[in-house]
Image 1 (cartoon, one colour):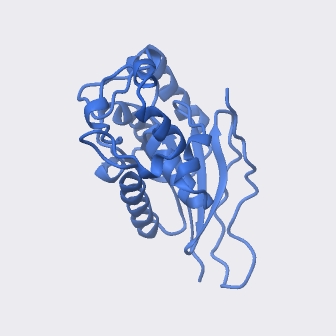
Image 2 (cartoon, rainbow, N blue to C red):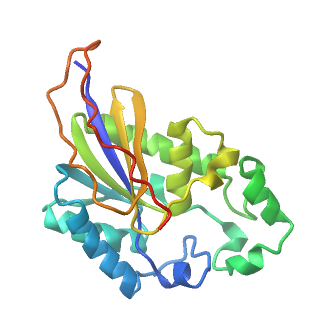
Length: 229
């Protein structure tokens, strides 16, 4: 029997680092700002029709604060998973992005990111590997289900690049805004990207009885609702 799992990849809400163009990285205590709190509340309504069965999150506070209202509305726990931690930006953590953009290394981050290691930090290949490995583990644990996964912009973008079959060097072309939702489906081991950076109402995901292998079915008619708003 074929199993279908849907994964909603949700970026955390806005915080003051996002609002002031600084790189929060893994700094502790980075909380949602007023707009981010409103975005977290809006996600509850935005996803009210989705038949969620589990909620997972990066352990960082800004992700947990975004995940908790949705989890509470569904009486679900929030599973913290370090596979979805923010990128370890090393010495760049906390810096102003406008100042970082003046560095010669910035060109490499933008145009050949697969070859770049953040000073005293991670490579994006390492980020992609841990995040995809973590996601694949979760979707195997939740066959025929819909799960929500709260993470960070660059982490989500590297995962989407993997499932799109896009080279990591092109991942910067993917836009993921705060509190946006991207939708993946997996029929057994076969991924489909149903939507990216969704900021408008999602079609309701319909879970159907698992068809026999070779039969059609299992993937809802959820068109892409991506937007750069």
